[in-house]
Image 1 (cartoon, rainbow, N blue to C red):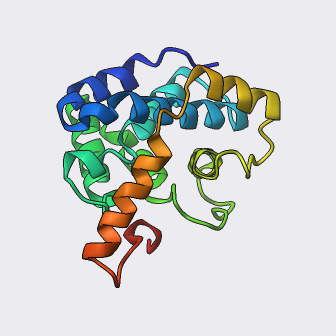
Image 2 (cartoon, rainbow, N blue to C red):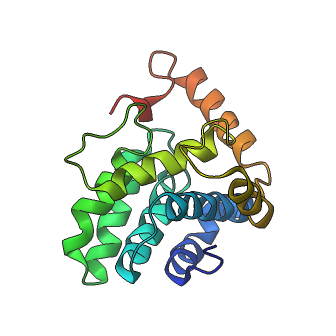
Length: 177
């Protein structure tokens, strides 16, 4: 299990003020996604770094930019972070992971497998484990026990409800990509 991802934690700590009371629930979500991804596609130290950055930023735009149309802002923050860290070569991969993480259908086989694993990992968490894409039930339960939901999904429903009231013709903008 990925219990400690220092890069993910450092990124989220930089945004603790914007996350406010949602800091720990969002951190746990990011850790669940990272762990589900790792169950599906374990990898190298570089893979762990890429996964940490993608997991930290993938939904962060909701809080940093105050919008439920958050993929663009999340990607912009990830790009700025990677460039500042001297990892500009990783920008296309991390942005693809963020951009496609809500995609309903599987990625084309030509895509980097980390993009598809990240998509599946987020769907595992969003569906509360109803779809596990091969992650064993005992692994799912162990990850959930270590990183409980703490109201994260309820908070997303609140954001979606608020957004749909103000943008009724575009209730789930993250799915249009």
